Amino acid sequence: MHMRFDVVVVGAGPAGAAAAYAAASGGLKVLLVERGRGAGSKQVYGGKVYSHYLEEALGDLKGAPIERWVGKERLSIVDDAGRTATLEYEGGSTRAFTAHLTKLAAWLVDRAASAGAVFVDEVRVDSLRRDPSGRFSGVEAGGELVEADVIIDAEGVNRLLLERAGLVERASTRDLALGVKEVVRIGEKEVEERFGLDKGEGLSWILVGGVTGGLPGGAFVYTNKDTVSLGLVLYVDAAARAIEEPVHSMIEKLRTHPALHRYWADGDVVEYAAKLTPESGYRYMPRRLVADGLMVAGDAAGMLLNLGYTFRGVDYAVYSGYMAGRAAIAARDRGGPTEENLRELYEEPLRRSRPFRDLWRLRGVERAMEGGDRYFRRYPALMGAALRSMFELGESTPSIYEALRGAAEESGISIIGALVDALMMARSI
Ligand SMILES: Cc1cc2nc3c(=O)[nH]c(=O)nc-3n(C[C@H](O)[C@H](O)[C@H](O)COP(=O)(O)OP(=O)(O)OC[C@H]3O[C@@H](n4cnc5c(N)ncnc54)[C@H](O)[C@@H]3O)c2cc1C
Image (cartoon, rainbow, N blue to C red):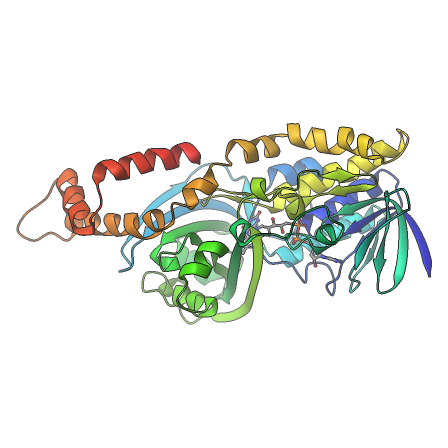
């Protein structure tokens, strides 16, 4: 069988689906190839999507499988004893929603198919094909060749095709984080009652410290319509050195954590999933995002921002995929998808874009995260000891300073060192 398309998009995640939608909307003949069964079956994420770039790319979110608009943001530091300090933000205007990524990806693929893209699932692309001049000219899958003027690689974090084509090095454990997640069904009414939410309102909750056993990373809780998504993200390099138990038992501990389990008590675990994610998009980014006949988008291109309290992967993937699809159209009208054209039409505008500039500006977060034990175990312990002195009162009543000083002495931490670290962390993120 011999097939030819204007564009072949590899991977029907948010980036690939948006790329196929954009290119097909401009009249190009597009093939979108996914190795999983149906769109979305291979997708795993936490649960919250910022709407801005989706609206910019798609025009509207009509029919999107939105579970809840986030009306409450919560950040908690938990110490090893389960003492928790929480900051809550509510009353602002909603710019993010919770969704199941499997459904969101399927909806995006439907949009691409409605615009005219051909979607095939259960087909794994084995390699990117080059012609004798070195130009990328198609993909090979199961012994078949599909030719294309341009390929958009949106294969996600595990970018084996780019590796095989010699465009990126094998990922180092320093650049990756592992996410594990469970979805627990408790019912719509219970979601609202237990989390103190209005009808249709959602909660996004990030926790650090004792919830990861002090390992660098964090935990998340997102409320869906009648379920709760909870999970952990662990930095692979640090975890590989210090982890003392399998991750499935760590998530079990999170689910049964004394400070948390009442939120989903008696619920049914209806999903368990795990997946890698780039730890820092900027560091994960390939040196070049284009070659002759090829563009790279989404996680494969390092388009992901993780500040610990904010995770922007899906919206940045949609944004970069959409730009790649638009660039494919513009290249057709400009003499074809040569490397030079794709650099001018895709890579340079992407590098000038707000998401990319934010990735560059906030790249220092990696250094902060590498401060490991201090941020994820010792400071939560300091916080726990200080709060205990402030709130578990007996005969005497300490001032905040006295509580902090006592906690610092107890945990062997210098207050000045902690303040310097806090300032450096604040500057990095
Ligand atoms: C635990 C976890 C929590 C996260 N939480 C959030 C969050 O709350 N909010 C957020 O915005 N982001 C979050 N992210 C990040 C987000 O999931 C990604 O940034 C986003 O999915 C990237 O989209 P993508 O299309 O680039 O890649 P993916 O979603 O990974 O899609 C790639 C697709 O390509 C397919 N594919 C790969 N290789 C081939 C091949 N050879 N042939 C055919 N198909 C192939 C895969 O099957 C897959 O469907 C999280 C990630 C993880 C792991």
